[in-house]
Image (cartoon, rainbow over all chains, first blue to last red; front, side, top):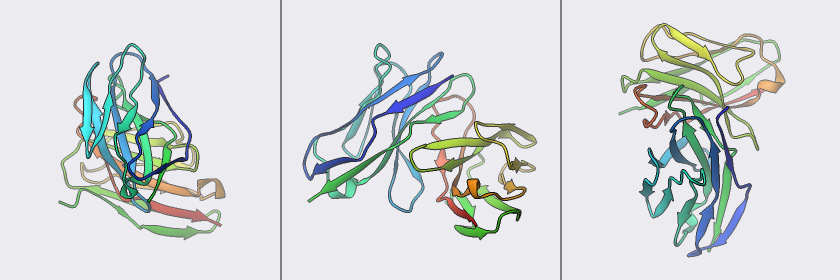
Length: 112
Length: 114
């Protein structure tokens, strides 16, 4: 079945460092890919999405490119801030079933 | 806009008790779903609905019931609470047409079973 694998955390960075959180997927057909962010004590918020191969999603300085050849959707940010500290979830939504499949989440901790 | 509203935010139950977690959305979304979030396991789908009167099981449906009598509401019922159901529960909704639609999440219900 469809699945999402993302790197385990926590990822610990200093402010202004470069961030990469790896995400790979397995799916039949052509899923849409998402990154969600969860701040402490809150629900999940959509961060960005990409719906077809080579699409780049971007928001708040974060970017991710839908790579069909490597089945990946890695999240990147050039300069992280303390306020980016949160848990990040990679997810895919199946074209066939509409179900949203999540990775296990990666906790990011940014220190001043 | 209220978006997706979940109640209660916190609940403590004793083993064997039953309760209903409420979820309502005001965006006229056809697709609604319930997830549980446990440490190290991400979010797992419990039940989902593609429209009023239609529900289906997700990845971990045992011990939970749902119904969808209206487009707006999608309650989750715990029939006989067990400690293994201690978790944070999230309700989500989206337009059902096409996989490109993101889901909108409520703020969650933190449930503890003693």
